[in-house]
Image (tube, rainbow over all chains, first blue to last red; front, side, top):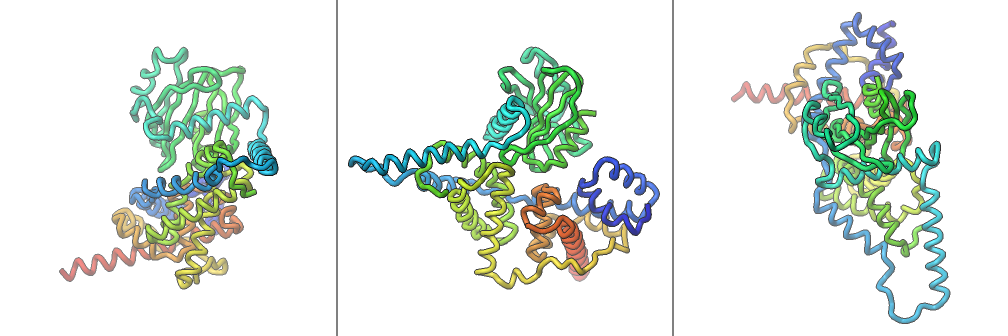
Length: 251
Length: 185
């Protein structure tokens, strides 16, 4: 690989935008090119300092309250009058409800089989619920040897628990959850500001399945099967990094 | 579809889909307009807009949908109140080469403190600041940024490269100035 052409590759590699084959090819190039290796280290130093500087500005609580307070006033009809509504108003309300129902149905994205679809939606709902204060973890630990035994006696299977801290996805805890009418293990990983919920249960159909990504309500969901378990990872993390997470686990 | 007679189910769905991304929304607005109070007003306005147009949301990436509205609201605010801050646009014709003098800077960058980094990022032209925030703080992919900004992926890539280069140069300059002040003491 000529170094002159590698500038674009270096950026794409650095941002996790290369596919596996080109990524490996670039890593080969790095071994023999001190110039690219130095440039990559420099980019990494800049990124590291950006990440450790706590530059992310989460919404202040008062703003959250302010936004919430403003919404329902708009959502509700103006004070319900005690006088009888004329028929035409009732018809208008009925029409509005019908339209809302219609839109609600249309808004559900069409993805694969109906059952898988429902399962993925359940997973996203559980992910959102878990992010509400105090719901994320039952056992808080970055140690896989603490998290794994915690599930003993709580589940009828032993979920594999792997820490991926060195790959940039530290394990932060676990909890019990209920998905698809059964108790499942939920492991919580973190990627910068993003939480990843990894749901695990014994596989329903035998045979390995490669990771597949879908997007529901803005969340990315990756599902795969292997080692006699079904896995679902969900996060607001971008799909390429979540895919990387799945690839690390499904190896 | 902007009916005021939505049921509570719709409000609940709005909470789940749109309010869930409030942090991302505020972070973007805060970095685009730089003043916390302005950012809060922008978010308030953007969320009312989002609520109004929620009927038109067809599913898909909710964060992208919210950020698009926040971004439009932020840029309208800047156009109206601080037009001078918008003059620098992406310029694809300027070619960013891989840095020639490597090595020394890596060590320099590792020792910058977060206030310096914050200042350096605040000083960048708004478009550069935006791509850095979306990529490094929000963790968005090139594709996601391209769709949000409605520009080609190649432009995202070159913009990001120029933004990083400028950020690095500013940091190095700031470090040098700090060093000189230290010597005079």
